[in-house]
Image (cartoon, rainbow, N blue to C red; front, side):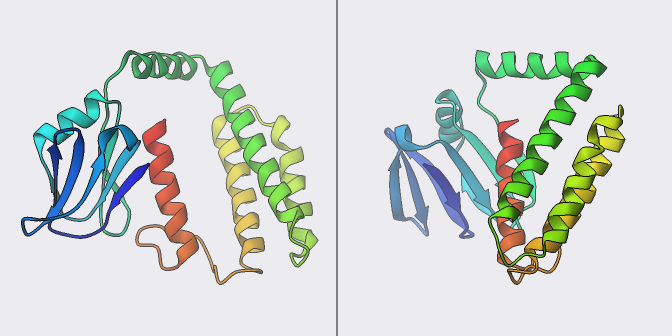
Length: 196
């Protein structure tokens, strides 16, 4: 379970084996620590050092965000598996060929998912899908990260143009998001950042 704290002036404390959420000295809720995967705090909330220590010892990360959803800080739990993940990431980063291969694979997978999602929507102009496929077919021609990011950006722009045909979404706007789709994108990207 992810705990999302949106209310200002809320206090988070450890109470035995639970997280106690209170405001003005009144307990609003208690959640067993064993059920928690992460804590995401938006705005002004206080959290006790004892709870921070307990959460991180249990492998639970804490994300501190502005009210608009911008990630300000993360308290990561330390574990050996986390260290091994970081070392693997650094090893890939210093090997340009591996980094390039991974970037192409991530981009390839993301673009194919976009195509698959758009293909399910009959009301979307199929020209969007053709344009994305054209960009995707050129991906293998490039051997530098910036070009791959450029292809991904072009496909993302076309994808969001297609999405705007079936939703009230007009364009990608970051922090502060002005519509539900941009809000969920901001939150998703924040959570993904905490995982990598």
